[in-house]
Image (cartoon, rainbow, N blue to C red):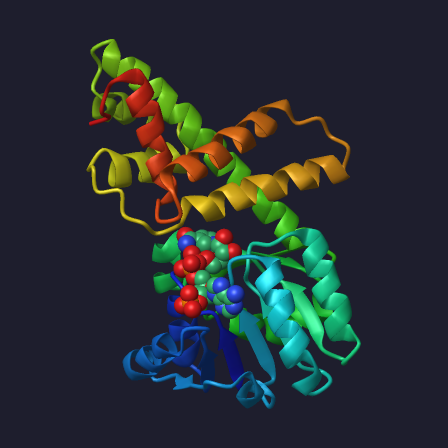
Length: 290
Ligand code: NDP
C-alpha cells in the first residue's frame, strides 16, 4: 500500500518515519528541505509537488489546523483516485473536518478524522492514541496503517467526532496544567517544595498527565522543551469551546481556561511551548516551581 504523508512537523515527522519502516511512504512538506532531510534520515521518498502524491492509496496529513488541510485537499483531492482514503491527524475543528470530508467525497475520496494524543514521545515510539471519526468500514481498511503509529485506535463516531474528542481532551490537559501550577505555587510559598508535593499528589487522587509528566519533566527541571506549541494548545481549547457551544452546554470552567490559555499564548508569543504557561503563574506568585 503506497502512502503519502503531508506535514512533517513535531508530530508528523516521527509518524511518517514509523510508516516508512513498513511501506513506501512519500512525504511532502511546505518547507521542502524538511522532506529532503526526512528522506535521508528515514528512507521516505521526498516529493516537492503535491501532484506526485496523486497515485497513493492512503494520504495522511498532520497540519496545524483544518484550514491548512482544506487548502491542500482543494488542490490534491481532484488528483486522487476514487477509493483513496485520507486520514487526517490534525487537531482541527469538527465542522472543518466535515467540510473537507464532503469536498473529498465529491471525488470519491474517503475521509477519516484521526487526531492523535501522546505527544512527540508517543509519535516517535509509535504508541499514540488516535480517535477516529468516520465510517467504521473505512477505518478497518486502513487499520494496518494506523497500527504503525498508534497502539490505541478508538472509533468514536461520524466524521468530526474524533476532532471533538481531541478538543475536549486538550481542554482537560490545559485545565489540569493551570490548576496544578496554581496549587503548586501556593504550596511552594507555604514551604512545601513542588517536587515533594508532586511525590504525594502522584501517589494520590489529584494526579494527571500534567502532574505526572509535564510539570516534573518540563517545568521543575526548568528545561521547558518545546514539544507542543502553546498557540496550538490555545487553538484546541478554543475548539472545545465551539464543541460545547454547538451542544448548548454552558461550560464555565472551560470558558475560563480558554480565556487564560489564549491570553497566555498572546503574552508568551508564538515560540512558547505549552508548559510555559506555568511561568505566568510563577511570575504572579513570585515563586519558581522546583
Ligand atoms: P508543527 O508546528 O511542529 O508542524 C506543523 C506542520 O504543518 C509543519 O510540517 C509545517 O510545515 C506544516 N504547515 C504549517 N502551515 C502550513 C501551511 N499553511 N501549508 C502547509 N503546511 C503547513 O506542529 P505539530 O506537529 O506539533 O502539530 C501538528 C498537529 O498535531 C496540530 O494540529 C497539533 O495540535 C497536533 N498535535 C500536536 C502534538 C504535539 O505534542 N506537538 C500532540 C498531539 C497533537 P513547515 O515545516 O513548512 O513549517
